[in-house]
Amino acid sequence: MIAMLIARFYPCLGGTEMQALRLSRELIRQGTELLVITARWDRKLPKFELIDTVPVYHRPSEGPPGAF
Image (tube, rainbow, N blue to C red; front, side, top):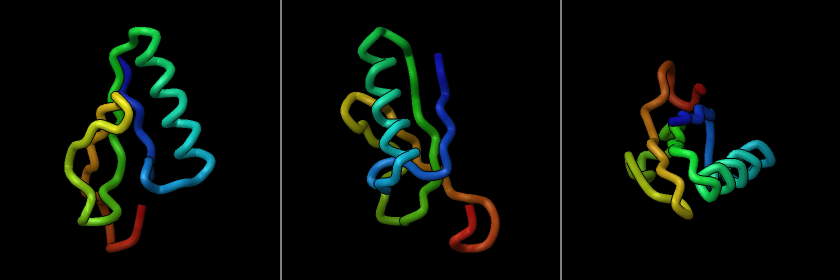
């Protein structure tokens, strides 16, 4: 099992976020058990969702609002 920890993830669209999504998809395609843990930077984001077969857990961020 791989736990990928990243400050922001899809639907936030930056280079790091897109690379993490691509890597996650490919590892899962190869049979690796994987999940992503990321900050819940928008309260509209669900606590859990599947993004293209990638399980993503949005967790509250620590610290003052807007901090990562």
